[in-house]
Image 1 (cartoon, rainbow, N blue to C red):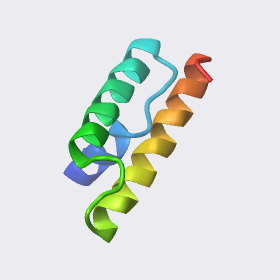
Image 2 (tube, rainbow, N blue to C red):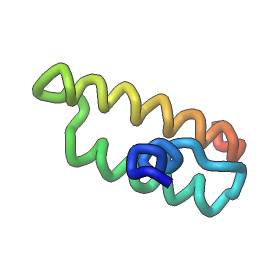
Image 3 (cartoon, one colour):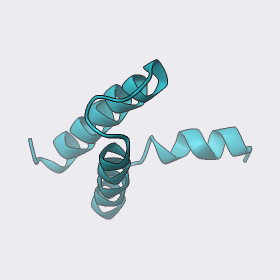
Amino acid sequence: MTEQHAQTEAFHPGQDPQRLREDIAYMEARLAEIGHDGDCAYEKAMIRFFNEQVAQRKARLGLV
């Protein structure tokens, strides 16, 4: 498995509830580090991406 594939795979988990919770916790921690508005276009894109990913994982868990 290539490094790029491993990184991509980290953001496309199966339906394992524990893995989904771990992903949510990681992304929410990163969002807290970045802040809610971001200082540059890269951070703003990361904020959008993480918010979308958190919402998708919460939906899979039935939390939204």
